[in-house]
Image (cartoon, rainbow, N blue to C red; front, side, top):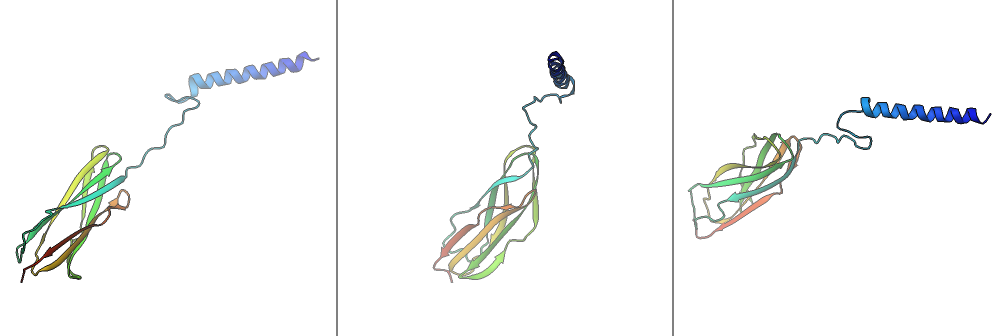
Length: 161
């Protein structure tokens, strides 16, 4: 009588072993193992932005002469895709707002993960002496929402009108 339960147990174990072998040989997706999981697809995203500007120095009194300011940003993306961004900034003198950057959307396309530099220029006229403060940052609107830290430029002109 003890042989029947033992034979039944051995039969069940044999059936389980055959089922596992069939799965591993024929049904398991190619390139995976029983302990390996397929990683989730990484979404395209901007991971870092740094900004800068030039020139760093100006003539002593550039009255009524436009100084062309070049704003630049390094945008880092984790894979191929298109990034949409805006420059946001302003210029003030002695606490009075003189103007701001036009807020238009631009784009840059990445063919692979990496860093690209984007630039824009803005003419600024310093009509009077005093301290001028320019602030700007770059805001990415797509594929994710991220912005650089605000970069501040401060220049003091003496001896002007």
